[in-house]
Image (cartoon, rainbow, N blue to C red):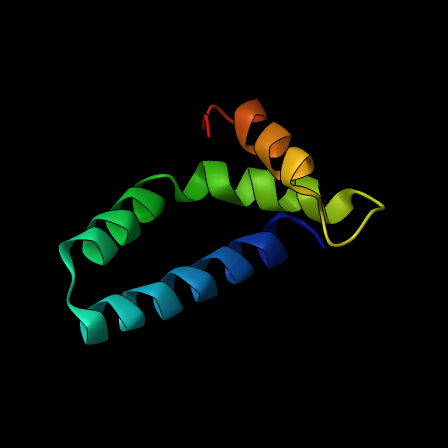
Length: 74
């Protein structure tokens, strides 16, 4: 999967989350969706990195490391 495919996957996920947030109407859901949208480019890089790794699904440590590499600390 390349950057374009990763971007499509991230955007689809964000759209699903936004739809859920509209249904639940909780401020936490809205805030999380907004934070993720604001970091879309970094999330695309992290997702592309994770998909390039052999071990699937990625472990919690792999996910944390991929996010850390793009400047998102969890």
